[in-house]
Amino acid sequence: MTGANNNPQDRTSYDVIVIGGGAGGLNAALVLARARRTVAVVDAGEPRNAPSAHMHSFLSRDGVSPLTVLETGRAEIARYGAVLLQGRVDQVDAAEAGGYVVRLAGGATLGARHVVLATGLRDRLPEIPGVRALWGEDVHFCPYCHGYEVRDQPIVVLGVHPASPGQALLLRQWSSDVRYVAHDRPLTAEERERMDARGVEVFDGPVATLLSKEGRLRAVELADGRTLECSSVFLFPTMTPNDSAFEGLGCARDEQGWLLTDRAGRTSRPGLWAVGNVVDPRAQAVTAAGMGAAAAFALNHDLVDEEIERDLAAHRSA
Image 1 (cartoon, one colour):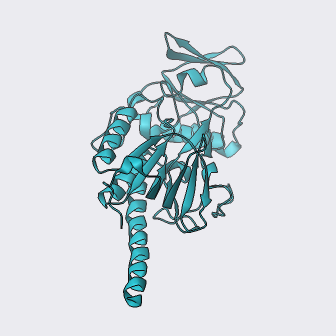
Image 2 (tube, rainbow, N blue to C red; image 1 turned 180 degrees about the vertical axis):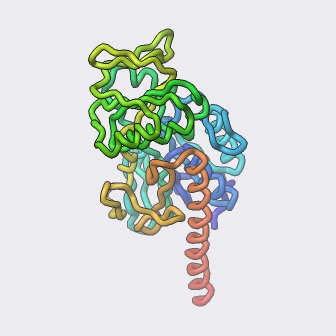
């Protein structure tokens, strides 16, 4: 075993390299560094929740800025000797002598016995004027993250995804004034009946634009000229995992192309792990942090098992 405090900044090889410095990656690094593993976190500095001013449903951190949580986490892992490297990982390759080579943009390479992928996902937003400018402010995705803050206020849900009708029905939990605009996802007869039963008013036809004043949402304008005044818009983005670093390594994937892992975050390839939104689009920050911790526990046990076998072989040969 190598201790995490032996000139960590000078290393080019680590027990574990964590790709991605969000809640999942940092919590994995924290647990592993406290287990006296040499750990490096490579982070591109593009957290998914950066547009949001506050993070919710995270015990003891409810209402805190996501960036504040990350700053705190970076300081905590540094306290135990983990290294934070600013950069982007282009590819992870298997090393001839075992373990992995992590190739950074710009040409630098790092060696690792195990690699944890915690790079999250990308939200592709619909091409509706005003959506991107208000994303994270008055345009949201997750009711559990932002529903309470707009409780009892007028909410408009945009029909831009197969899951959009369910999103509207769920938001009725937070407000009695929820309206659904079908946009390019017309409702089936059954979906429309559910909307009626739930008290969600339905508007057919596409959205023209989101209207704002002084940087805050004012209304949704439909293509036929009608306007729906509201304080927030919810939509379901198209999500794509940031998992290109593991391409070519033969990790098993599901029918939609997402990496498959066990409950501890193991991929089908030994030594490769994945946690957070890169494998679970539903994971909130608190969930990702838990996934990072679970992976770190299991990963350290795997490293210990490897070291026991190595020590046994040396002991028997002696």
